[in-house]
Length: 247
Image (cartoon, rainbow, N blue to C red):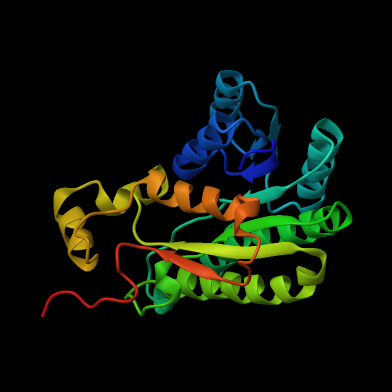
């Protein structure tokens, strides 16, 4: 990306979002840093000298207001990313109705809310890129992943349908599907060596993902250089979803 671009990132202060936001700014672009945790978001905003918007992305009105602010401050919106999400590792029979609602809200509701806010805005200005976050769990059957796998599969369906809806306006919609990535959200899985070793064994490349692995792929999809890529879910998962390891 050579010409200055303008972006909005939900979940900007998280593990992946932090790395992505730094890449965007280092490349000479602007980004509205969004999320629901004020302190780390404002700290990042002060360091990168970028504007901050604190809100819960399950609130569609707040998401629309953030998109409007991005256009007001930057003049144009070229790309948006939704990194809001949650992780639940329970079998279906132990998943409560509250667990389910929370999983849907944090992952799927936030994703649809951003699409409905950003796509019409980018359609009016000549196109842009929307990047959502799926999971390797949507493509391969993993035990105790029923809720999160179902919701992430919903995101992949959203990607395909929205890509079809907005293709004529050059609005591209794609997703990245990570394997297990070392972020604060997944820390309880990899924090102890036994869990980390079991997780590494599931990935053909023999290691867990790092935030930079995912952020670099998202940054690539945001670029107008990828103007012929839409409706795709790209696995960045160390082989988790396509290669069977072990006996």
